[in-house]
Amino acid sequence: MCGIVGIAGKIAQKERKIFDNLLTVCQLRGRDSTGVVSVTRGKEAKYIKQVGTPETLIDRKQYESIIGYTPAILIGHCRHTTSGSTNYSNAHPFDFDETIGVHNGTLAHSWNRGENAKDYTVDSEWLYSRIDEVGIEDALNDIDKTGAWALAFYRKDTNTLNFIRNSKRPLYFAWSKDKDTMFWASEPWMLCVVDRDIDMAVLNEETGAWYMPLPENTLWEIEVDATTNNKSKIFNMKPPREIEGGANFTFLAPPKKVTPPTGHGSTGSANKGGSGVIHPFQRTGAVDSTEEELATLLGLPAPTTSTKGSDAKADESTSSTKSEGKSQTSSQRSSGSTTGSKSTSSSRKGTLSLPGLSSPSSPTTSKRKPSSGSSEQSDSSTRESSPNLTLVHSQPSTWRGVRRSSDENAKNVSLRNVAGTWYISSLQTSMEISEKVFEENTNGVCAFCKTPIGGLEEVHTLLSRNAFICTDCGSGS
Figure 1 (cartoon, rainbow, N blue to C red):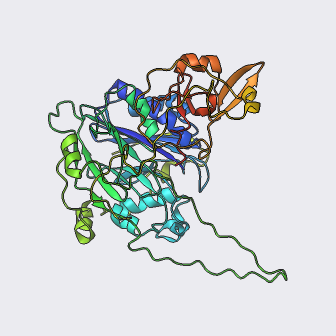
Figure 2 (figure 1 turned 90 degrees about the vertical axis):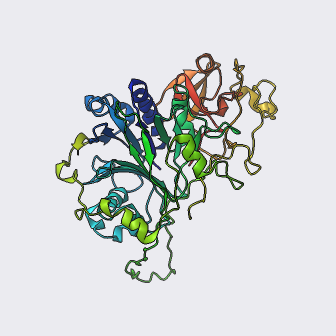
Figure 3 (figure 1 turned 30 degrees about the vertical axis):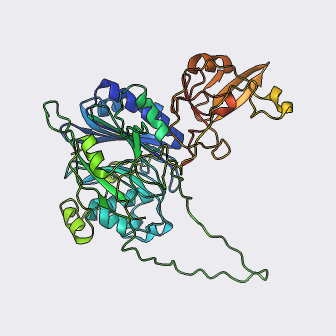
């Protein structure tokens, strides 16, 4: 599991600070390495990456030089190692002649028998070498669709920001109220660092939804023009294209291994790969907004019929003429380097579905009550060992998500009692604060759903000393 975040459009000092915060919370999905792609308004792509957490990257002078000068696109990635070693070479992004991007997911194990796969040690870099050489459609069609992917990448030849995912990896989007800036993140609660500082566009008036998932198996290609003298639309989206992947994949079984008899029968195991990621807001009922309505809302061109086959391939031919698949960075990496920076020139749904907030198929959550007198603490023998908060609650807003019990996802915090005082600690950052400080700083209100909690046991993640995510919002996807 890795994390992807980003901003595109008009990016000023406020938005750059928001990107820092997005990258910081993104580490909850991976802390092995961190990387950032920056595309300037002059369409120059640069990147920086290193082994380690976002805090160490943000503190480097090279980081400021990458994002500090009129960026139009910022893509962030935090890696959790699932294959290959944890080193600079395997950190994201991966940079090729016409493509630079990041990947959240794991390809099926058959990727290492693909074309030129022997030249790469991780599936993500190999995949981007194929995207750069043959284009996104052919690259995905040539791999086993049982793999998992969410991709965010920039095409230098077409100046387009591209996104695509399958059902096994999430990606969510939101826009500023003036439609000048777009934000994205692997999990919706991560966007709370945007919502608290920016007036967000409401994507569905009935439900109040301000974020939406990227439709599965659908390629978004967006031209971004954030020049200061630009009086036209900043984002121009090409007609979305359906790419499910795996259309040309042929499974090649590895050579059989002969196991000598042991006299005790035979044993073995099947590697099933990574498990699928639950889509926390997927609806089974009617959709909330058509593509035409969304295009009108965002000031995008009206979508046309999805192109497939030869039409889609022809549309992509101009971006897939490069025959060299070697990464530009490979010749400049040193074996002992851990940090560095570089400058470089299921089928698709018929409509875009917004999160199901009031659908009958979406379970609802009841109001939480303070833990004093709470019916949830039915066993009196455990009351003395559990933190018991009396929090000053702000007025709760309408909950916009699906309730998830704390048993479904491992928490990112731990609790301890010292001399009668309860403390809560982050398992990611080792930050620890007392129950009193927690209450004073947060008022006991989740930073994402704005719903008050009843006690420290309902905290899933500490974002900072002043913000947290509750167990209902904490996602294990």
